Amino acid sequence: ATGRGFYTLRWEREVEAGEVEFGCNYRGVASQGGRELETRDAFGGMFARRRYRVAAGTLGIVVEPPDHPGSVSGGQGGDHSLAQDVTAQFQLGWDWMQGIPDRSTGFFGPVEWRAESLARDCAVLVGPSPSEFEAVGTLSSAGVVEVLVDGERVAAKRLAAGDFSLPFRRRLAPWFPRDFDDCCRLHSAEFLVDGASADSFEFGARVFESFRSNATGGRAF
Image 1 (cartoon, rainbow, N blue to C red):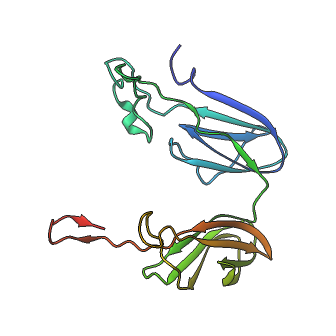
Image 2: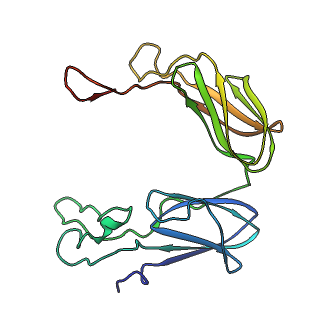
Image 3: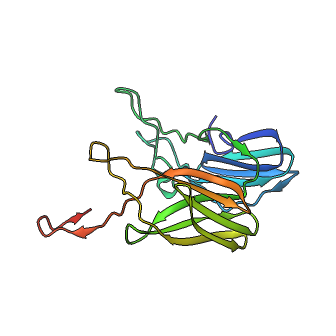
C-alpha cells in the first residue's frame, strides 16, 4: 500500500500535566480530549521541534507524511516533488544499492515529557565585543529573573511572561578549539526565577568576524 493516508501514524499515551516535546517528519498534530493543542511550531518540516503544554490525560499525536509526496516512479528519488517541502528527498542506499524514494515518516527520537519549566530556551549570546553578552529565554509566568555566570550574579530584573533579553557586561576567557593553548574554556550559567533554579548549562564565549579577504577575494572568517 502507498499514499499519504497509509503512512499517517498515530501515537497515544497517558501523561501527567506538564510539557511534551518531539521531532517528527513531516507534520505533527497533538490533541487532548478531541481538541488540537496550540504550539509555536505549528508548521511542517523534518527539522522542527514541537513543544506543547499538556494536561493530565490521554495525549494523541498524529504524524503525517510530507505535503507533496509526488510519485516514486521514475528512478532514484522519484519525481522530486518533495523539493516543495522541508525534508529529505529520499533515503540513501546501502553500498551499491539504489537510493530509496521513501519519506521516512515518523518520530525523530523519543517523545519527551517534563514538568512545566519556569523558563525555557535559555541561552547566553555573545555581543559584538567579547565583553558584551545577552541572556535570553522565555518565561512561563511573570517573575524576577536572575542570571549567574560562574557563580556570580550578572543580571537581575522583574519580567513579564514571554520572551526576555537581559544584556550584561563581563570579561570571560574566550573559547578556543582543541589543541590551541588554553583551549575549550567553558563557563557555567544558571537562570533563576523568583529564587528557584530554572535552567543551568555550560557555554563557550567566542566572537567570530566575517570579512572579504583581499588575498582570495572571497569571504573569510
